[in-house]
Length: 294
Image 1 (cartoon, rainbow, N blue to C red):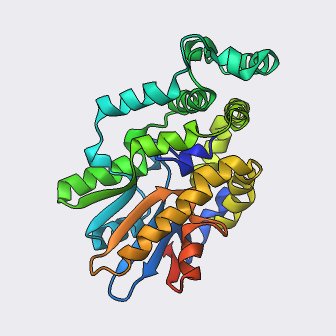
Image 2 (cartoon, rainbow, N blue to C red):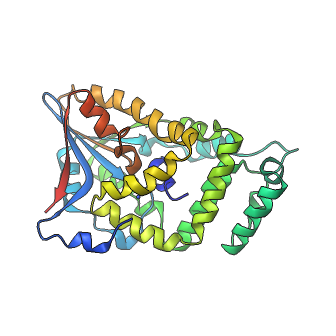
């Protein structure tokens, strides 16, 4: 489910001609103004390709202006061993269960056919919960066409921040993020896996258009396609998008009372639509403007 690349700490489709505007174009980046500081809101793509760099210069300018970075996760303090232990605890089924069992015979047969068409061995995920299988399938499909978290926005910005001595903070822990997915009903997890497999057949075209939409800040397109798609799954939308947006807005509200400037980096789907963070901040009286690349 490629929308995951825009909305998780794990997660963006438009005609290429839009980038040819000689007057510049919008970027998936907003500026919220506090009484004595600025908070920039950057919509992230968690995995990118080497050729997707350099990023628009207005993003670098926002980074330069900010003293502190705020991400979904505190990226520079992640413990790989603890993270893997959490994944194993939440993402693996009990020994007496299998993915086939929790999917049901008919749906599992459909999943197996779709995975075979993508040359993804679903049997290697036999002991995983459906949400974890969906994440793994998506990552395999993206890796095959050159996408890598090392080129993603978070890793790129974390590397710069470490070099420049800028602080990095996080909204959530790894355990919290995985619990959002693990807490989904079985039906919602099944939907997530089947949709991810269905998108795999056209992953190259989807991602090419996705990255272009993100780069030129085509918010209308993202709302009409990706946001509308995830909204078809209300449980998933509330747990992964809307509830987290409200929590993050409460934190950003406090940041806007500070004297320091911040660069907030979260999946792009969290910044669009009526439940997006920019809209929620505007509803609280803040001035929020989408920035442009000249």
